[in-house]
Structure formats: C-alpha cells, structure tokens
Length: 304
Image (cartoon, rainbow, N blue to C red; front, side, top):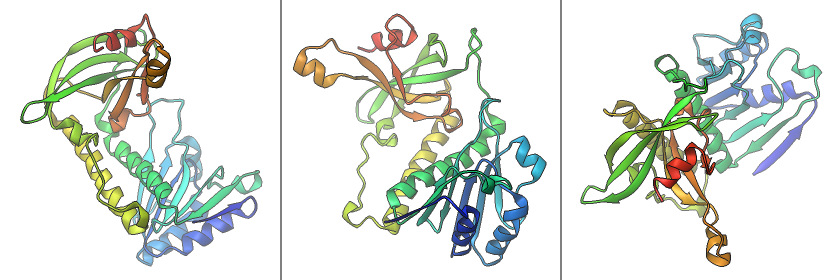
C-alpha cells in the first residue's frame, strides 16, 4: 500500500491520476466542473476507459455545468431530504487507486485550503468505496419508483422486520413487521410475514472461500462481486415479494453481554439492523437503542 497526501496543486494531481487510467474511472463528487473535466473524461472514454460519474444534483452544478457527455455514464443524485447533499468526494481508478479528501472538483476549489489523499493497492478500503459508488447508482435507479411515508408527527416512516429463529426443513423464519417513526420512535405492529433461508441470504451464514493472506485486486473484485450479487438479490427479493413491504431487517441483541455475564448488570437490548432498503438507508439507522418507555422498547419487549 502507498499513501500520498496533497495540499497544493490538487487539481493537477487529480488530472494526472485520471490520465494514468487503463480501463476504468469511477468519480463520485458533490461538485464538478464541466469546463475542466469534460475534455479529460471524453479523452479517457475515447481511449476505451469505462468512465462513470456520480454527482449531486444541486443548483451550483446546474448553473455552472457538469461534465455531461454521451461517451460515458452520468448519475445526478437527488437526495431523500431537501436539505441534504450527496457530499462524497472520491474517485476510484482501475479498481486499485483511491482519491479522496476535502477537495471539491469545482472551478473555485483550488483557491481554498483543501486536501486529498491518493491511496494505492489498499483493496479492502477500495472495496468499501466501490460499494458506496454502486449503492448510489442503485439509489439513482430507484428514485422515481419510491416514496417515503409520513408519521402523524410529520417524521418519516419505515417498515422494520424483526427476524425470528429458523426452523423446519426449509429454514423458515417468522418476521414481525413494525412501522417505525424515524424521529420520535412512534411504532405500530403491522403483522407477520414468513421467509425461507433468509439468514443465509442476509449473509448471517456466509463464509467467504478466498484466502485473505493473498488478498490482491483479483481477490477483492471476486469478493466484491459476490457481496454485490447478494445485496442486489436481497433488494430484488424485498422489492418483488408479496405481502407487507419491508424496508429493513433486524434482530434483537443484548448490548452489554460481558457486563451482564461478568458483573450481573441488567441486560440492555438493541435492534441490530442487518439489511436496509438501498433507497431508504440514510433514513434508517444501523442500530435502534432501547428508549425504555417508547416505541423501540415496545418492539424489544415483544421479542425478549
């Protein structure tokens, strides 16, 4: 692994790395100048480099222009909430170089105090950024077909499935489905659903078959493709299934296991969320904590 940090001449450093690409460039930035980067990206595309650009669909980009071209794919991200941004600033080159930092790829960025780091061959880290990149493309693809329900308090709602234990020949699990208010934890029990082999689909039984001692780019891409396939399969499964719509799957877990076992502390429970609908992931937290007298406590108490 090699890591380089830059605080001056950042635009030139970015352009040099882009021009060094052999087969792929994936750019994900909040702001980007069409004047600066369109000719560079078109030149890469003309050389056979697969170029993909994800950017925030904000007024600054609309006013000043982004690098639009029929030579490569672009995705303008409209976020869930009017006050939020797609604020990432990273680029992946040939699946082996990562550029990230505070620097916006805009006309005025070079006048500000900014930074980037260029990271080479840190494949576990690059894989995480690859997932974020394609998560955003999935978010873009689903934008027009999704909406967020509102609670009576005005907050957003999502449907949470609490996954029970598997049983039977087909590893069937009961899923208790709850409507959950994001801001104030208002909840209501919507009903029960059943699913087969869901824990395996969620990766809760998943064991990779590659050797981490030789974790190179090929290993990373193989792992990434398997994880991506599982993620896409889950998204398609929950989008296409009949019955109650489910936006997240979680289980009840003890948060203070060591303290409870060693010091006889009172057990404290949480909801660990293993899967979230790609389109609602910024609304749904990864963990729901017991609020003791509120809705999350009602969910936890119903399952312990």
